[in-house]
Length: 179
Image (cartoon, rainbow, N blue to C red):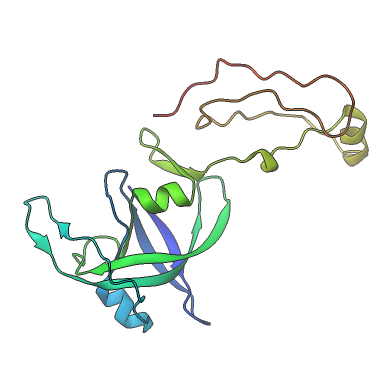
């Protein structure tokens, strides 16, 4: 699966193609991109030995910290700074490959059926308001309240409203599971 991102060394912003591979054990960057950006190698000398599918060793050029901005399928944009191992990537492949280390650290959920990905929803991303407060915000507007249940959420528990003293609001446990 591929997506698009922006690398931003210093004041530049360069759009690039980013691969997502849930089977990759490392995160990779094309050495040509590293040279183009003029990145300095990390001091970490403990790099893993990489092997291709045919069990041939892959030459690595060190680890490089890269600032990467990604926007998920719901429009959530985040920028991260993390290390990637530089290798010679095929020019037809993405310039960056997010493997399981990055997917786990960045809390990225992948929906292989829909060819989409998103950042994991955190409890701080959800807010439940009272009816009274909702009406106040929507005064003088025709509002149709729609609730969209994110199909990538595996498990939801009770969420307590921060604006009322009522009991927690139960959410259905019949949501489809991801992967």
